[in-house]
Length: 284
Image (cartoon, rainbow, N blue to C red; front, side):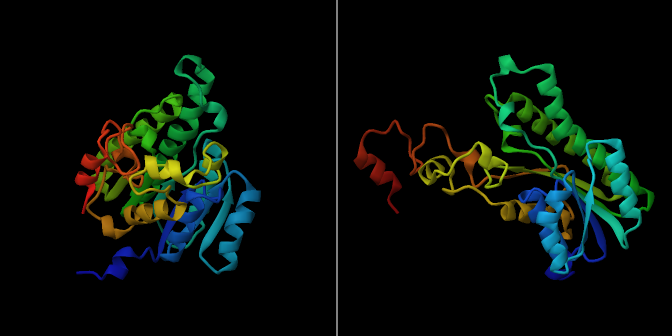
């Protein structure tokens, strides 16, 4: 049996991370995959962001190659694949992080326009699909194994009130993941997804404020996740530790999805008025 270290290692493998320059999950994945030995092609539309977040990784001597490209376009994908072919090592992985949604996209379902809907699907679903298509074709052409991981969301596994287009696009990533996994399984290419819950990123900070009391009430583990914790789940799905896992969406939410809306901070029903009964059922 291979050692744990070798099963976690990405030595000699090239991994593309889209959305690498935001300082959140993409940057954390880039760091962790490079530390595991991969040569990481770090993709972002913003060269400024690459300089800020990926530059320090280069200065540390980590094997990262920043590429400024819009992976939501055919030209952007072509430039990334051209860099792959200039890079030593075998293309092995893709992490689709690019996407998300601006605060202005939150609105009642009755107000969503066709433009709103199409923009969120283009940013979250189409970007992930066409990047996956290109990477899968390249890996398959060399008859190598591979692993593709996309970012879905808890909003794609549950309801997404006042964010219906985003939630539906993220749900579509789950369906995309399952179908791609089936089509590519005999080629040795695994396809999975991670669905984060509330995670402390610069993007989420634009509409989620700091409120520890609320977090303890809403999340089973009592706190929001970090980009590094999401990256750990992604690294697992990239690595040979998950060699028999494909077509799955891993919910990484600290137990947010487990909490019913009528549960209090101690996870007992808010309908229980009798404190003695509440105390009796929670006693160790």
